Image 1 (tube, rainbow, N blue to C red):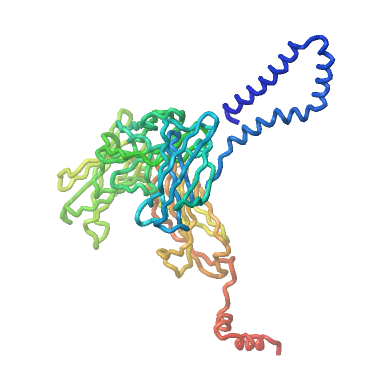
Image 2 (image 1 turned 90 degrees about the horizontal axis):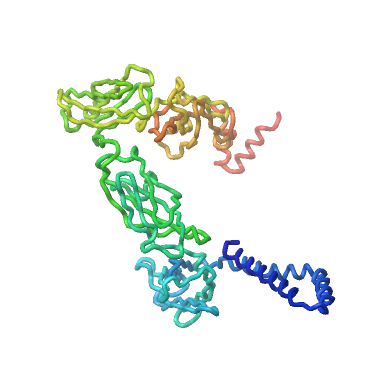
Length: 512
């Protein structure tokens, strides 16, 4: 029961107590025997009286229930003076004139509104929409219940009950404002007088990225009142890169929680903070120990040009550096060059370390960029998996990595004569593990005596952010001692020749 209902019940009980006290204070001595009889009668009928006291409580509780709408009709209100309805009119011809009428009648106030349902767009003529706009600002109260009447060509097709406080969908919030890594926005403009609390969600991405991309960044479950705030993670921003952000909100108070609003207008900005934007044709990853491997597409440089990468870190506590000569990956792709920077000390990198990467060709610097090892982890391939019946186990790293405490792993397995690129290759995804990883194969998907291959790769989870997938492990090969029994070739032959073959087969199996 909410605060309003508790208050109403409390007032009702106080009125009962007041009535009892006033009846005692005004009685004369001659009325006292009568009072005693009345009290005795009340004691005998205590259960009945309790029910009378409970009745208004039950009625109040019932008033909190939210009436349901027909499946093909959905209506939401801004909890001010607007109700918007969406109706799937699949059983009515597209040119039929349909309206929705809403009305509330009570002793204190009555109000009503109507609207004509129109197709949402030409491609979906059956899906119709309209908004009921009432005259008075903040028309609805939490206890109000309206009758909704849907009419088509002056024929009533249905009346249903609608409680505005149960179906709140506020207007989209204002466009968010971005200042370095701080994002702020107003939940509603103007401020809503009847809603005191909101839940909000912020989404942000690179400008050329789609909102449907699963890697879009999200700040969830932001609790706020009129003004909302959130902080972006600087490590996930790139200096000079353009980004977009949007927000939506839902009401929390009054209860029940409302539906999500539509999205706000999109904010667009160029980030003045974050990691330095790397050259678009250079990618580098580290084993988070003492090695950084870089791959560079040197398409704008002649193939015989000598190019090197130099990495350096300078701080008060420690300084270190390394260089490597870029060499073609293979003869067929001379422009694609690769090299590994190997540092002297084991576990050189700390999570806070940031290195300057310098790419030089023929002693001419072609670019300097910033590289943070903890943001670009790609560990070495894991050990070859071991298979025991249906159990598969493997070591994430050999030897064990001192700086990485958690991994995400993927196992793939297939028949030996099958290609790894075959879409039917079996996959065990999202295996969380530390140094030792395990997975179970499904026996029903194995054939006894059949040869299989299995391989695994891993990515670091801790420290954050999540690393890139490692290369694949060496492939394990085994003959399955479990699974469904492989059908004999004779049986296949019998199936192909019908019952006559089966009769012949059974005849051969008889003893001589």
